[in-house]
Image 1: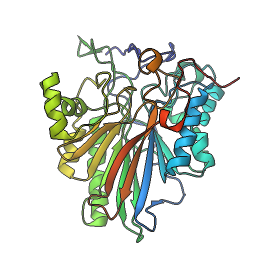
Image 2: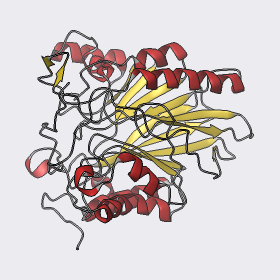
Image 3: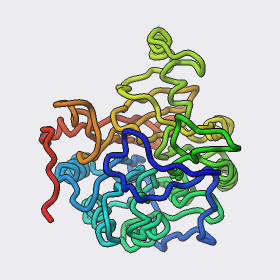
Image 4: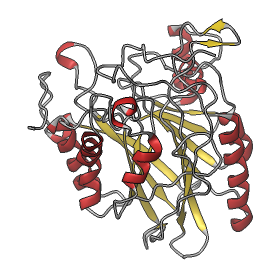
Length: 377
C-alpha cells in the first residue's frame, strides 16, 4: 500500500518533507490514557457552561498577529468555561522543534494565561513538519501536557493521538450532566488501496476502533448516570453526513436539493467549498444516532464553510477558520469569515445543548486587509 503526500490546494506551505500517514495507522504508543490530576469541568451554579471552538489557526512560529488578537478578543467577550482547538493548530513551515513549540504557544497562550481549561484535536497538518523537526503528534502532546490548564489526554490502544471524553459535572455535583468528545480524524489517505488508485480524496478517516471506543465509553457513562449523557463531539475532518445534510440527500447534489434541505434541516451559514471528507464513511454518525447521546458534531478543515444544521436530531456544523495565516476566501474577502464558534450549554434546557453561534473577527474590530501580518522574529 503506497502512502500519499499532501496534494490539496489547502496545503499552503505544509512542509514538503512531511511523511503522510497511511489508511490504517498503528494505534498510539501510549499504553493508557494520560489523564491529568487536575480539577474536572463543571456547570456553574446557574446551570450554564460555555465552550469556544477555534479551528485551523494553521500557521508557523511567526503566527499572524490578527490570529492571536482574534483569540484574545473572543475569550474576553465570551468568557468560555472550556476551549477546544479543533485541529490544524499549526502548519508544516518549521524547521526546529522549538519553532513548533512556539507556534503552539502563540495560539494556546492566550487561553492558558486566562486560566481556561483547554484541549486540542489533531488535524491533518499538525504533524507536517515531523520529518524535519521530530515533532510527531505524541511529542506534541507531551509538550502540551506541560501547560497547567491543558486537560488533554488520549485513549490507549485506539487509532490516533487525541481521542478523549471530558465529562462536565452537574451543578449539583457528582454525576456528569454533559460530555465533550474529542476525536482524532487522522491525516492523509494512501495513494493506493488494494492496488487501486485513490485519485480524489486525500484524507484519512476516523477508524472502526475509535467508533467502538466511543460506543463503549458512551455506555460506561450512561451506566453511571442511568440515562445517556448528552454531549458534543469535535473532530477536524468532516464526515460524509455533512455533505448529505447540505443537499438533504446522499445522492442528490443540486441547488434545488439544497433549497429543500434548508427547510428540512434548518441549515444556516455558508458553504464556499465542498466537504473534503475521507475516502470512506466510518459509521460514527450512525453509532451516535443509535446511542442517542451526541447532540452535535463539529469540524473544521474546510476554512470557508461555517454552516450548521440539524441532521436527524444531531447538529452538524463547521467552526470557521480562525487563522489569518492560511487560505480563506478569494481576493479582498480573504479574511471575511475568520472567527470562532460558541456553544451554550444549560442544564435547564432540554438536551442541555442550548445553542451555537459564530463570532466574526469583523465584528470584533479586527483588521481584515489581505496583507500578512506575521509576528516579528
